[in-house]
Structure formats: structure tokens, C-alpha cells
Length: 76
Image (tube, rainbow, N blue to C red; front, side, top):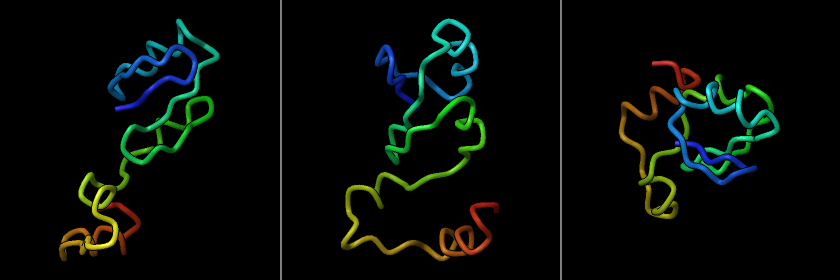
């Protein structure tokens, strides 16, 4: 999910291109990792931190599958 910085709407990724046509000056912020994307950079945002990692930073221990995915650069 992403939130627009211009009109504060919350949208799924597949709706961002359509919204960008109506609100061309909008930037989009990922709700999960709080990263803001310029232009169409959001298209490349395919993975980010999980809710568990976000809210339990000090006690979070990634599973073997997550560690392998991270070592492959998020592709896997």
C-alpha cells in the first residue's frame, strides 16, 4: 500500500499509475517502510520490511527463507 503526499489517498500499487495521471505532482510513500518515491520510482519497489520487522526491531530474527531472500538482493 502507498499513500500519496499530495492528496493523502492510500492506494494499492496497481492503482498508482492511474492515480498519477490525475494527480501528476503526487509522490508516493510506502506505508510499510515509509520510503517516498519520486516520479515512477515506485514501480521498482517490489519488496520491503515486514510488519514483524517494523514493529519488533529489537527482537526480530528473520527466518531462513527471509535471510536467503535478502542475500539474493530480494529476488527469490
